[in-house]
Length: 173
Length: 227
Image (cartoon, rainbow over the protein chains, first blue to last red):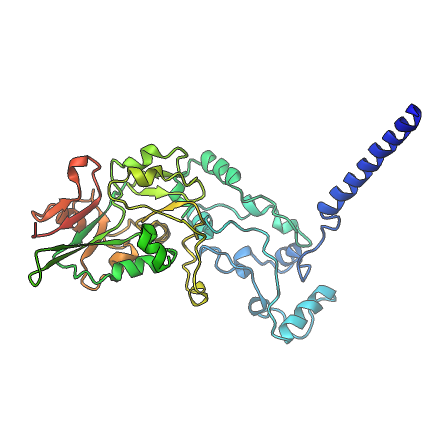
């Protein structure tokens, strides 16, 4: 009888372990690839076309929000005729032809009670985009998680290091 | 470092209540039902104190707009157990809603009753939802809130000034109440700057501060010829 319990106990432990691994695998996003509607290639646009960030994120230097470019910006270069033989470009052309906005997913965001300004950090603070957004020039496809988490801990760490104000009212309202 | 202060000229004020409405819209302040308002749960950051003197038909009405006084020696910040309300270097008394635990000590400590409490989850009529100001966060149930001197406007003004590499000029930063006042009775500016209009008005013989004997040193200064 005791052996039987021991045997089943082991089996129970093993099955619990297997189930927890399965749950963890499912919860952690087993397929964390592209969440964006188009697998935009930053590297290609930066290296071959020699675009800079503010060419597409047009308000990054002058407004609090940098803005995510949509078809009105894309169609300045892309038209009905594909430039490359990439299937991703065909997806873009479809959006342009149908005059439909690309449903980009925003990855970097701060909560409602936090004020973040791109122009404060980029134009006045003269920070490089890569400080928060990582090495975008090496990204061949969109990332599905932030390269740097915009959490209060991370903000304060940088504000401490650069001796920038930590007054609550400068970010929270 | 500037020290922001407000001057309200009661001789100019007609008591129309435009400042209250502008404040309510600017800061996404919740609308409270009339029944709740009657039991003292009305929410105004810019309130209007109305007093009547004399007997009918010779009644004298006094209407006094009352925002948070952003005291230089604020009693509210001393009692806050979680540092949710504090005075910053520019003299603004801030209220950080996500830090607030809703104990309401600060409301009790404030001699001017400038603070209000969210008794319910704020709700707006559907027509209002598209009119909410995106620069001001929505508060949740169970936190204390109060006039911020429109600190969100200060951030924008500072950014504009820094972009153009200049100082903030007198009158550039004004809260919504001051901007909306039809008789220009509300002045706003840096009281440490001797050139500013606010400083000059604060030196007027008509100027007084509310409950000065308490030593709270309020930064809202009233001007009035009347007693």
